[in-house]
Image: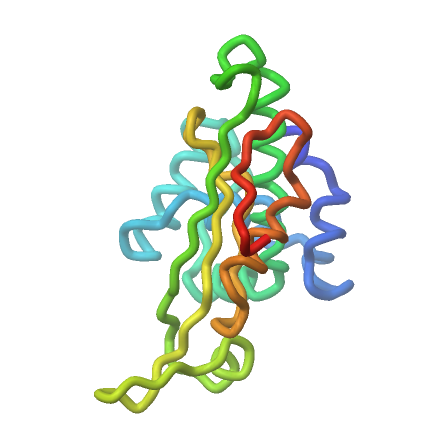
Amino acid sequence: MSQELSDLSLQEKFKLTKSSFTRRRKQSFLFTVILISNFIRKSLSLEIENFVSFLQNQCNQTNVKSFTKSAFVQCRKKINPDVFKHLSSVVAEEFYSDNEASVKLWNGFRVLAVDGSRLTLPRTEELKEIYGETKSQNSNGVIQARVSVLYDVLNNIVLDGILSPISVGEGNLAKQHLAIAREKDLRQRLSIF
């Protein structure tokens, strides 16, 4: 994973514009991706402070300078969110190739499951246009997306995730997950497929 993160082609592939991340700033593409991946739980200011402190003290990155919440948000807007799906697939591939002896199988097969759900999103015109609106008797309408996850149940690892408009059915999303399935994957064939 560290090799993937340090590869400059990752930045070129997942920055949103050619001019993004071309000047040397306090916050780089790599640091922004790592901070976002860090599962922010506290206030953004505290997370940035702790992240910079960690890099300076634990990783000997003395050239890393603190940056503001605004700088972080601006950098985040320059990154294609698909970078996280890509990095997740790299982690999953490394798990299966680097830990062959400890990968749990059932009769030689990976046991995969698909689960879908709805996710309520913030009410914005942009999200409404992308994901659609659902109406109920008691509300003005809710912006919802459909979420589908392909999961290795024996090894507790997510292999794929899809966020789609609510109008796309779970069966269609399950079919999309099959694109990453392998020959030695156990999957139940249902009538919706």
